Structure formats: structure tokens, C-alpha cells
Amino acid sequence: MSVAVYFIRGIPVRVLNAMVNELRRNGLWAERHSYSIRIMYNGVFIASLHLYPGFNEAVLRLISGDPDAVSTARNTVVGVLKKYLPEYVVKEVELGRAGGTYNH
Image 1 (cartoon, rainbow, N blue to C red):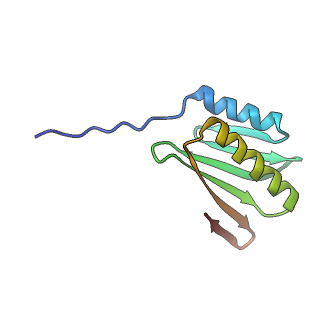
Image 2: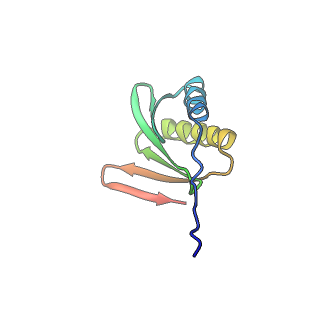
């Protein structure tokens, strides 16, 4: 009997760190822990990005508030993802006080 073995290809640390640096160069403060990146704009947390290697999926959680800040975060993060992880599909969740709505 043969057993199939599958390996999930992770994201190299240098790529993750380059993404954080690119976000910072584009006006957002970003910090990374493993495959999650927390994002601030003008001293306020406005988003988080969660990467799922093996699924080639990224979930961008945007915190409702200033529409310009949310738009800036969305456009910047999506641009960085397309540059560094073009094969990833980005899903967005916009969080407000009463929970979130899932946008495809």
C-alpha cells in the first residue's frame, strides 16, 4: 500500500519581511507575526492581513472607520500582495462595531 505525502509550501521569511517593508514605504505601519500582518495608519489599527500558505489565500480584515484610511489600506495591501504573492486570492472582511461582512 502506498501513502501519499503532501507538503505545504510556506512563504519564505525574506518575502514576508519585504512585504512589511513595502507597506511601511507606502505610508502604513506594519508588523508581522508568522503569517499575520497588523497594519496601522496615522497611529490607528485599521487592518490585518492573514496569509494561508497551501491554500494560496489571503484574508484582509479592514476595520470600518475613516473611508479614506480603509481605501488606502485596501489599495496598498492588494498592490503589495500582487507584487510578492501574485498567485494568492485576496478575500476581504470589513469589520464594524456589530461584526463583519464577508466580501468576495
